[in-house]
Image 1 (tube, rainbow, N blue to C red):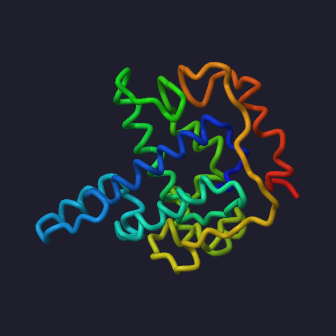
Image 2: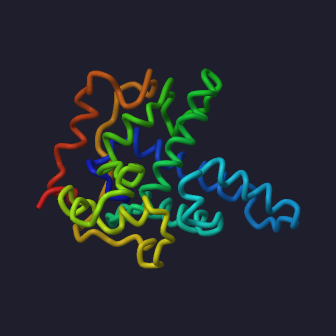
Image 3: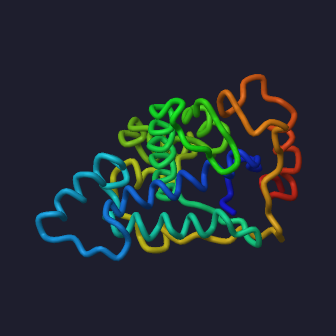
Length: 220
């Protein structure tokens, strides 16, 4: 599974599976295996830029598809926790935004997310709950001096993403986090219908997913 900042509950895990599927479809634009004609390649590029405005400055659409597929494989792998880089986080951040916008715009016509019917998704609250930070989309970091970056603990990788630097192949690897599996989501609501996610009031099924962080690998 992917190493988020807290243990995923079952609803979030289902959401991320749909997020990654939709992101792959949008980054590919055409069905898998289709070879676009020359006049279609520009359409694909423009669609990709519209869906992933930040990531498209750093990754080609083919690179994004390959990386999203690896993230999808890692998401369902219960044997290993995978440590992500800011290039991964940026792609996930934009994929989550895209999915939430599409879901919320669909209203009552929105399809189920796994076994769940969810009225509204709040991408800001989701990223706040499960992402370590949002430094990789903080434009002000671009203008900081090395001393200032050290002072507020901005990594070279984060600075590179904000600067729009192309990733080194090592920065696109999913690195196993050294904790034994299996790694499974915790926390299940009694009802498969949710008004919104994340839930307001933070019920026990939601907050309980974070109680076992020590064996999940968030604390040493």
